[in-house]
Every structure is written in structure tokens, then in C-alpha cells.
Length: 297
Ligand code: GUN
Image (tube, rainbow, N blue to C red):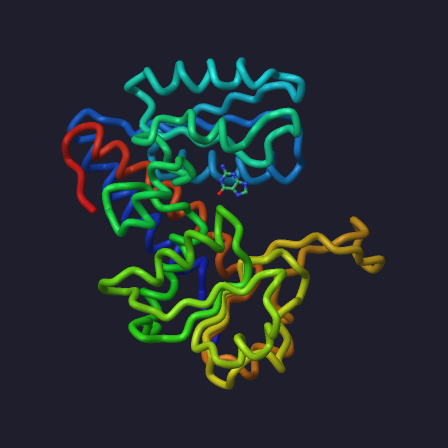
């Protein structure tokens, strides 16, 4: 069926744009530098950071990865962030989540210099997004979903959008992006969460459903208006005795039954996932442009 949103293809377009910006920076003697910090040995984080490193190198960025042991103190992590904050060769700093339980994620993210916060997690950048100030960094996954909607020319002005999930990384910034006054936004956004009374009624009204609550295959065909655009942000590991590893990854959308009803839908994998890295590297190019006086939006 021809209703798939090809996240890999759009991510590729954005990577090509970023590579161009990196080339312009390099011609001016600036190599965008990106730091990855990982704490402990979370297997998914190892894979994610590995993918981000590989793509950075492909686009010509300079990156370094620091892996700290699980028992690192928060003070030690903050001291490391301080050193990268102060060093002008590094334009972006990414501290991979999840952090060990003895650390306070909010404190750590607030410690990254806002101008190097290419993850868009610092409270200043979250605040700028809320205020509609374009000078900040937008969190990569909701930023990537927004790019998919824009590049597939999904009408957003006045559209009913339901965001499922109110997390700080996806749900809240996603709602904030789409409710802003301005081009490529202006939607009527409903945020559905665990205390919402009639989830199905809200979803059935939606022209666009963005599922980011982390419940395997939560969105079923009977929750989707015919022709609606369905974006699946979920990455859930579920038991699967038929798989070699005993598990498999599923999204927040029951894809097989929802696809025939949707106007457009993201496959999963191959939908939102590739966009997160694309936005991260685009943000890093912009951080380098801003730091060296050649910023564009
Ligand atoms: N863990 C899962 N997604 C992300 C992300 O976008 N950024 C960081 N830093 N950690 C994550």
C-alpha cells in the first residue's frame, strides 16, 4: 500500500542537508564537534550511541564518546560535562538516557550548556520551545516527527492532533510544537494520558495521532478515523518465543490492522527512529553555526 511514511528516506534527505552545512563550516575552518557520554552498560544505549557515532563520522563531524562506569558519582559526571562545556572545539554534548538510578536526570540535563544542548533537554530550551522562541534546540524525536509531517505536507493548521503520552522527551514537546501559532503548526492538540477518561473518543476525532506512551500496540483500528495520519514513536521490547533472542520490538500502534485505515502511517522500524539521529546531527551543525557566527534557523 502506498500510505507509508518513509522515515529512512526523509532522514537521508536531512543528512544530505547536514553534510552540506558541515562542508560549509569546514571550508571556514570549523569542524562541528559532538560529544557522547554514556554511563553504565545499558545494551540499548550502546546500540543507539554506536549508530549516532557512525552517522556523525559519515557526515564529517568530529565526535568523541566517553563511557563512564555505572558507579560514577553524579558529581563526577557533572565535572566531565563542565570540561566539555568550557571547551570550544565541542559544539554539542549528548548524555545518553537512561542514567543510573542514583543520578537525577533533570540535574544532569540542566548542567549541559544550553548552547550545546543538541538534545533539547535543558530547561532553557524546553522553555524557549514553549514560548515559541526559535533560537533554542528542539528535542530530536518530536522535532523529527514534525519534519515528517511537514515533508509529507500533512495539513496541520486547524487539524485535530492527538498526542498519546505526556513524557518530557516526546509527548510534552510534541504538543508544544504543534500548538504554536505559525507555519507548519496551528493545530488543535489534545494530550491523552493514563488518567484520560475516554481515550477512544479522543482518538476517533483525530486527523493526526502521535503515539508516544510506550504501551505495545496500544492504538487499534477501532481508535482511528479513516484517513487519519498515524505516527508511531513507540519502541517496546516484548516476549516472543518464536524469535531467536526470545524478544522482539513492537511500536505503540497495532500496525497490521491500523495501516489499511490510515491515510498515512509510519512503519516501525523505519519511521520515526531514523529521524531522531537526523535531527541530532542537524542540531549539532546548527550549534556549530551559532557558536561561530553563521547561524541560520
Ligand atoms: N535515550 C533515548 N532517546 C534518547 C535521546 O534522544 N537522547 C538521549 N540523550 N538519550 C536518549
